[in-house]
Amino acid sequence: MKSYKPTTPSRRFITNVDYGVLSAISPLKKFLKRLHENSGRNFQGRITVRHQSSGVKRLYRLIDFKQNKLDISAKIEAIEYDPYRSAFIARLLYKNGERNYILASKNMKVDDEIIVSENAPLKEGNRLKLKNILIGYLVYNIELQRNKGGQLARSAGSYAEVLAQENGFTNLKLSSGEIRKVAWDNFASLGQVSNPDHNLIVIGKAGRSRLKGVRPTVRGSAMNPRDHPYGGGEGRAHRGTKRPKTKWGKITGGRKTRKKKRLSNKYIIKRRK
Image (tube, rainbow, N blue to C red):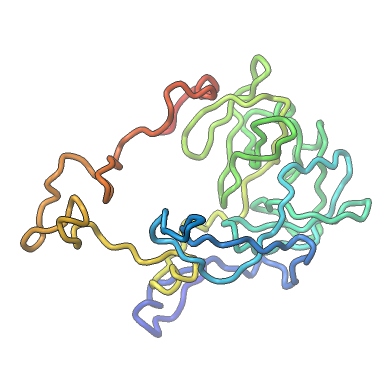
C-alpha cells in the first residue's frame, strides 16, 4: 500500500494501491470499448437509482473470461490497470500470434507462461477442469455453466478453495464462507485474483468518490419528516421505527432477499455467515 504526506487534511489519511507492479505500456486499442453511462437515469431521463453520476471518462477492456484456446501456451506480455474492475488484468500473447486480456492472478509476472488444458500442470495462472485440481488448491474465475466463462471469484483478492470431489461435483468454499457444489467438468484458473490489498484503500476525500461516479448521500435523520421515516425531531432524535428502512419504508437491515424456491439452492451446501 502507498501512503502520502499530510500536505492537506484529506490527504493525511489517503492510502492507495502501489501500482509499481504494472507495466508502463498503453492498452491494446482493439480491446477498448466506450460504454454508455446512464448515471442512474432511465430512458425518460428520470433518476431511478440515487447517488450515481458518470464519473471520469474511461474505456472498458474486453476480457476473455472463457479462455477457450485449449492446449496453446501463452506468454504474459504485460500486467495492466483496468478502470472498470478492482483486479489487474494480464495481456497474453499466444503461440499462434493472437492476443487477449485475462484476469491476472496474485503472483503473475511478465514473461510467465500459462496454458489452458484439461490436464494442465498445477501451476498458478493455468486453467483446467475442476476435477483435475487437488483438494486444498485455490481457484478463481470459475465457470458455473460449461463454456459460459468464469462467473465466480473475479474481484480483487477473491478465490475459492477446493474442499472435495464427489459424484460429478467439486465442493468449493468461497471467500464469503459459502460452500457450494460446481460441476467438475467446468474450468477454473489456479491461484488468487490479483490486487488483494484493494480492500485497504482509504478514499480520504469526497472528490475521489465523485471521480468514481458516486454522488453525495444524505442521512435520513438529517431530512424532514415528509422526506424520510427517520426525518424530523428536535436535536438528535431516535429512529422511532422498529427496523431499518429506506426512504420509501422498505426494510433493509437483516432482510433475506434470496428467493426460497430458487433452483440453484440445491447446489449450496452451507450458506455464508
